Image 1 (cartoon, rainbow, N blue to C red):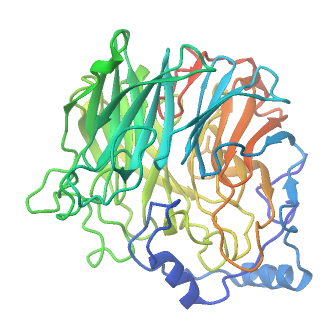
Image 2 (cartoon, helix red, strand yellow):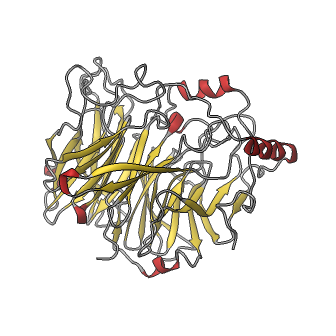
Image 3 (cartoon, rainbow, N blue to C red):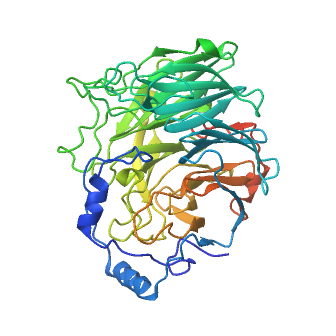
Length: 500
């Protein structure tokens, strides 16, 4: 098979170097587009690269070794089984959740339910129109949860946009009954401070707790006031979901002043987002642990008491991380992978100018015991396939591939595609498989490519922002043992214990 950690042997060589520092800096400091609401708040800093990399890039430029528009390229150990284009919901595709033979696909216009009993030919079971970015999605039992992070005139699925400066505006969580997958029923809405950009389930037998991540408060927003230095906790009774309600707002970044105690961002830390909440939280219920990716901070906390999470440790990276985006534990809970969404998902950052350590994954070991555990940085990982300057590319959502004794995950990189990589050695991560499409366009920067790429019961499922729902099959001796592992339900931000 093809070895992908060696740049000389990968199928696709380097793409185009950034054309102009000024253009790239403008992209990274521009306000977010409607579909990319995760901005870093400062300009990027060019990183010096080796002469060998510069030479390789120049050679790639001269030979035009960038795939054609929408051309599919992949490693020998990945097969593209199918693509299901977007249908009734034309908006941005976002996150994925799974239950039994079903996949649930979030979209800025609502959500779509697929029957994936035949992964080569998924069938649409239902499509629900319910606009409101992000429509981050998860499922538990007969309930489906949907995040709304855009200000609406009410909580209905017929709502329209309305300024957040108006007190009557609504943002938060929506709850659906999915007992009948072909006919989901909207049963509850819970308003939360600053809306719900993402959410994470902590399921129990009688109740489902939801950790709601949101950020960017303003004194002009009646329902999103500074310092907003924590998360909303919602309790949903399984037998009476209509009684769902906020039961607390634990402060994760205590501090004096209007901005709380999180990372102050620019100008103190140039190019780093100020922490005004969390972007995403991943929980590992079997270990009573959670990891928070919180704009300018990464945190580790205990969820022994789900209504009152307790911070154990907190780290910053004010050199290479601009926006702490998401987190993934390994199965032993002695590592966490944090992602940096440099440029807010709106800029081309997978090129030689940005280099290997920005817009990348940060691998941290968890050392110590109990409340004295610490996060210790080990290395960065970034895909070794440089992209064209028209391709928005940055570390995004991924999941573990359950191989006992190994730390392997699959991850989405927007137009960098889908990457499978091994971080068993925290200091020497390496890519072992990939799938990607060529640029959506060659004349402008465009946000597209996989938003999420997750491993579920033997296959990789990817939700492409523009192209739709992809199914991939991975055949590799290093990952094949995972094909024997089955879980009844998967919300990636609620990590299962695969080997219990």
